[in-house]
Length: 436
Image 1 (cartoon, rainbow, N blue to C red):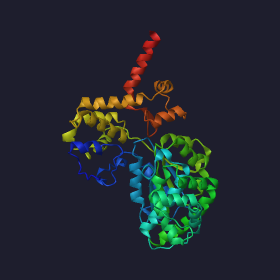
Image 2 (tube, rainbow, N blue to C red; image 1 turned 135 degrees about the horizontal axis):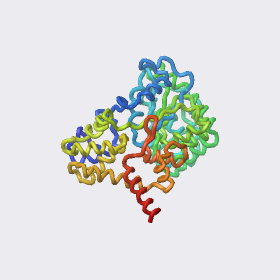
Image 3 (cartoon, rainbow, N blue to C red; image 1 turned 180 degrees about the vertical axis):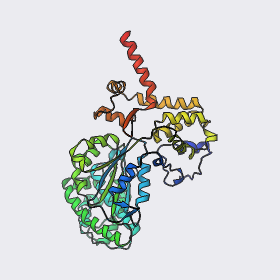
Image 4 (cartoon, one colour; image 1 turned 90 degrees about the vertical axis):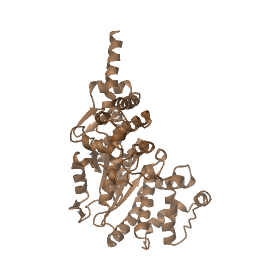
């Protein structure tokens, strides 16, 4: 059931939904808060420069295909910024930009590195179907890929019997080209199970991944030319919104162990990755060919507070749901993390069952989230926090950054405000044990 919302919300029942951190604001652009007003624009300016954008125009494609890793804390606004970049950059005088949202396209817990290359093809075909449905492509390399993937009898039988997809690999280009989209439209269903189709395709990619990239590059060259000739974009760019829920080893394989595959792909790419994977990639020579950008957390100060407050007040009618002191306290405790702020207010709404949030209710919510964070920490973590040793490249520090226990701002790292009272209590307990 699809619900249409009118903002700011005045309905108690709707309030809890629009405050969920994963609430999709794509259909509600009025909810977008431009934090770049107070956050350094350096990453945006450098990104545009790296992609050869000048005066809002791609006058000449980059000399080499750019591979960019984009990271930041969970909840710092990576997805929102990527979608904002996508809307801007996807234009006839800039790029044919294709957004791949992994959490929407697949069950991230079962995502495998081979699936990314399948998604490149699926999403590219979907775009071509939308923009140039009548255009014929030679696509010899793509034909070979699809034939190898789909000519296995067990695959054809499974697709027909379980997914109602009939694929004739002997048919002409038109049927195979658009027929594969039927599989693409059911990607999540097919690749989230131990299906014969998913197994066959993944094993085929594993056997000779570079050959797959070479064939795909043939098709990309043809697509790039046709899109430019039809004023659909002067170059190709894939934007992949990754997920903190995808296994760390997947990112390690894509960006370190088998980074040469992405490097060889003849398309520009922005890949969003978790912050712990970001630091791991930067520490390896194989990852050095990536251009990297880290979206900084917002410092909470008089300049940022009004914008952080908008994240809430654009969604909720403050006069109905929030006491001013409760909002101010929540802003301070957010640490400048948009997701954390949403979680604080959302939990306060739930605790009060829709009643107006008081300062005490906001404190109760913050205590809850601080307790959740505290319960995940080991003695080694606590020792790092006591010593304020946040700047090493150790795995434990990376875990603290990933878990938002330590927040990274421009040039510095600080303890998450939510964990501070629990750290003080831990120090006090340890002192009592030592003196007891």
